[in-house]
Image (cartoon, rainbow, N blue to C red):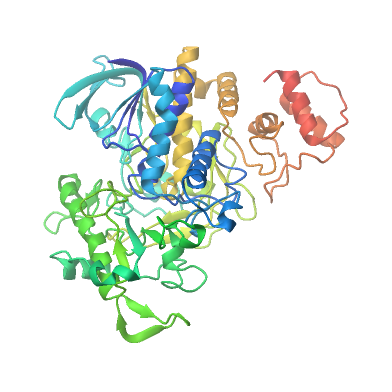
Length: 607
């Protein structure tokens, strides 16, 4: 079967890529191993997406914003809400504190399926569920172009799919070992400091430093069923407890139910107080914490060196065993919470000596319909990563490094990236992986997604549409989060469509300033910001004009804040600077607001 665009992986990035590319007119095939779309947002149980503080007004793409609004509409239209929830324009069904939005995983999956349904019905998009890629055939002449991808469904039936562009939207970069060479085309784990120049990279490369994965699980606070809630522990419970050191407090979490940041409300999915509906009799939370991060091994990368040789041992061979053990780790955590977790005093939050266990916690089996109740797929934090034309480095985005060295400092934004095709913001968050890398969580400045990070150095028709873009092990810790992954996938899908429409390769777009400029305008028309100006949102009349000027590298605002001040009058000095940078025929003077000036320059340049 032949398509314009073939996307392997129905993750958040893969779904966004399919949506964008198909709407742009490309014929698209999306291959997904499960029968759900959404990846982290659904099958992996991260249904409380890790977002940035401005997400309600700025920083999400138009399509991501539509997904969020459809989630809210689902609960408004299908449940009886409390009066306060009914009157909340930014409804958060779970009132969780890690995110401004929560939902049940099935709800997210069904919304994504409904969003794509018209594209399927109009024959612009074909979705192959229950199917995975197993092989790539490269061109015989150079070995740099994917000619076909062989996929296999659950019955063992194989098909050979070909496309002008192939997007790897799998959570682990599964296509990379099938089409490229490790070290040349892709890498795994932590690079050395000598390679990246990053202050916090290890002295020598650590292919075993891969962020841990997690099997989230849903718990309901159900005192009325506590006599039957406690599960049978895994057979190796004591070993798992010793491995994981099950606990509650980690990072910002202040207690189980008490303090500024309680464990229970961290990723609460449904808050009883939001509903006057018998279908929501109790709180429901998704448990995805340091307690059930899996510390026993990776499923990509390497174990540390063997005692006999000192050479790293590749870990993929034991991936299935690691996945099975990680599921038991989560079940062990359920049992520990129900039977051994220290109990808090309900009024003070202090630990009550001699009292342990919360049999009130009930493991819900219906949210994922899995036999053990855990998420369908593990929550994956780190992927194999392409060798890209433009890697993203720690020092470009962090305020300070792990030792306190200042990088972005008081600057409001990360380093400027002139080839930006999207934006994101999250802290550089490294979870301890059980192989000696400690936990790190440092602030970053709002950053951009550069086009060069989406283009492999050697492979010609492969694009990353998930976490396998050209980040390092460190910067993956900031770029791996959910709306950012969505933006990466959406921009990759748009890039493929733009190249098809204009007979270009991604490398040609990157190398030619006029084509790059044209592509950035295409990205803007798709409702994706290129730079951070939080007071000029997507719906603002001057959004595209302001973003176009910012792409030229102009300092359109103060370096210490994220504002453009669109309604302030334009100063003569600013007008002259903008006019010269835009290289257009425009009057020497202009009277009006800053947003009106940006619009005038856009009209003069016809961009």
